[in-house]
Length: 530
Image (cartoon, rainbow, N blue to C red):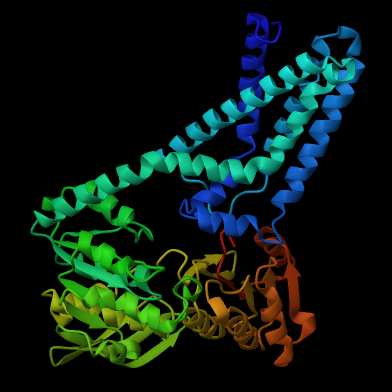
């Protein structure tokens, strides 16, 4: 009867609330990785199983420290009788706070975005932890009431130290519970966007491809803005929700053209996006083995990207993959409209031919691959009603695209920020640009990801391409072994090779070697999920 008394119930509730709040604070980094996973339980689970995942070590250490401190404090205060176990709770308070402080000292590579969904997930997690904590505390008190052992009475709450080892399964359970609300809500939000777009006169340009989607989107938006009012999907938002956000959060009557980036990891993804946002003009930027891990075969990649053509929309397609889509219906234009390309560390100059007329054009964007993206965007703009002179003028005003071979000058050093998820073609282009600069040439990279069965061979090939640079800094543990082997096997100088655990460590290393006139390329910056 003592176990179910009002004082004991109050004790259980108060302890559960304190424990749950502190324990939930330890989840921040884990929730950030879940957000980077697109709230995909499968991707998060795969990350949790990584052999190099150091989170397990931190959680195990936290468990041991909490158990030991709780036991020591409880025994030291054994003279307090029934209060000894409650006083022992101080061990959890101390080390949970230390863990939260220490864990937040290591910043996530992709900072947490406090979206409404993320806040709802936190609320679910706190509630779930409160329920689990309360049940565990009640169970321990019940065992104490039944067992009646004095030592167990003092040490009963030490068993709660197992909770840090449950962070990953509790995170996945909270995510599943939250999806009960999120999935229907998201579907309703997407239906609203589809209906809103269908009742509008806005022209839609759908852009897909294995690479260059965001670059082409930004370039095309910049060009079209010289003549039209242009709306585009923000950042790299290329999912159903990303499209729906752009549509629902804007008055479409204020725009003439909607440039929609469309991403895919599986066959059927582009078809789903086209149902929401049927394109008047389709753009395919190129095909390579990016996301081969989820697509499994290159044929599936072509099939998925080709779904943008199934509606019969007029299309602009990159020259290198034009033949792959010849069998699809609709009018297709090959973006072979540039010639005489001269590209160096100051930008690119070329001739632009549209509608039988040729004009000179120039851009501050670096690399021949940037000119390829400009050619695709220019032809799309031409098909939307701009003339070649307008387009050439607009090209000269295109700004660097953030994290996509963006040139930043800092203290006499050139920084090439190509940190956004790189691919095999983009990596080769970035290294070509790096070599166009004078002074020392340094590359910082963790390797390339999402290449499936080609991941090892392509990273070895990347390593071979690094030979001849003045310094090579490999970051982390994910894929640096094949990069290192490819570098050394192809004549790379081991004295010029450095391996560091984190990007922060790479930046510290750079401080010791950079001098005026040097150029450093940050090639790919993998988020924590990798």
